[in-house]
Length: 284
View 1 (spheres, rainbow, N blue to C red):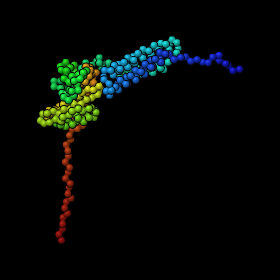
View 2: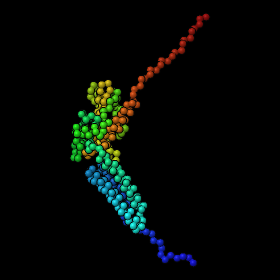
View 3: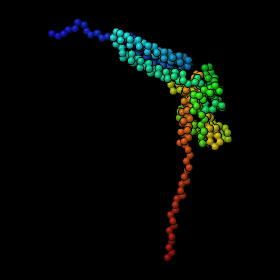
């Protein structure tokens, strides 16, 4: 006789905390992506977009707390939902990883936003100065000795670049590197002999949020060669989290590498073709 069950098998229900942890994580991810796109492409003003981004981070933090509460609920009553909790925690970790890195940078680096290879006479923002005169933007005037001292302590390798090539060649080399980085060039003036330096002003963007940071480069004749000075300054916020120093260091390395690869080699003059000796004519 076949065995009969008195009641069908009933599976354990999903934990409500696990479900809400995943919902909050998904909402935080969508809000973070949307706010990042808004800031990067300038769809709305920056402050509302940043408030949305920070709200997304807070939502991710709340998702973590709910997930841990869900762990406790699963342990006590044996309900299902471990997969939802783990997926929520993984998504929260992805959302919070980069902001956590920036928080470490904020704590370890000095609160400055204007970095230059020449604190005494930094390259000027001429055309870009008009874009740094609105509400909430940093001034185009260099911060001065206070910023220079902190820069020297935090970034001692930020120094001018001296090249053994004429200023016009150095300017073209730097210009090619700027174009390769896809910075938006606002103004450029080639060096003019005998002493007028070359000048480039461009706008760079931070990798993730796309905040605008202004760059000024000066290429000046220096004895038999040339000297290159660079300035990079955040248009917003008093703390750049190290982005300007990293940009200048990367450009300096590329300039030195490009200069080494563009050393002029002596040109060998082609040999004159050797004429075959004339045949002697034998008189008979």
